[in-house]
Image 1 (spheres, one colour):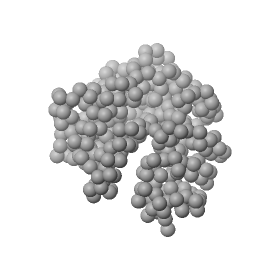
Image 2 (cartoon, rainbow, N blue to C red):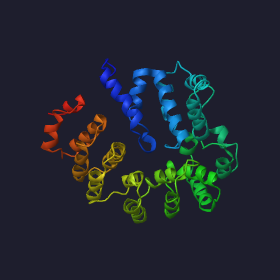
Image 3 (cartoon, rainbow, N blue to C red):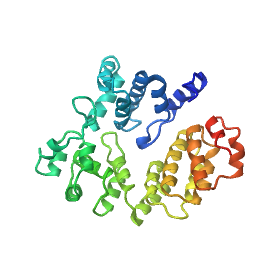
Image 4 (cartoon, rainbow, N blue to C red):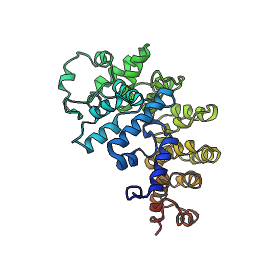
Length: 334
């Protein structure tokens, strides 16, 4: 808000955070919305270039396509993909970004560069849903996935349970980012236990699929990662659907022992999702443990609102809010 009104210091802060604070999963990077609001298409080019640089280095997984489509929907007068293509002719990193999107996500476009809801032609092109998924070079369109029948979902799950080719596993598994997996969750746990690689997104997709399920085995897997893995943070998002009373203790301990700024930001995103989905007064300790550690005013704001919704915001935080560098947090004091 203040950057839009000409606050150069706030503008600089937003761009700095975007460059230096990567998020996990679909949250991507802090500040991309604000950058697009500030600079429009040029801001999108900036984001695409940054993503391309990180994808080339292998430090992030391929981004999803909703940033591009969101910008397109808000700016119908611009052919966004065409503009990105033009810019990619002189910017190799934007080229990497576009090619990554084309490989993984840009399967829902019609000739007018908008999402198509017409799936009849796809439905009748193949006799079997498994063939339809595996014969496509890219992931199945999201609109098509959302319209799958229970029988089709079950067929995909059965095929996944016997599939051996990694690329096919990735395509089949993608369906369960949108639908609950109907077979034993141990199969998804097995995929989530694999070693991560930039060659595919099997681990990341499996984690998202596990978020839709709830079982003792899934909780056991998450807490095993917390205990034994150095990079356990992204697995914590599975607790969104597997949280039980008392988990606040371990979640608080994790915040208290985490030092790196970017990890704190990642944890904040996940914890906010956990406690938005699981409304409980137990959110107080882990969320308040963030307040003095978070550099990001946006996330402090989200945490404060969750604490307020659960009626557990402490007087200590209320007093600190009076001096919060993020002015919107000051305005929350009543």
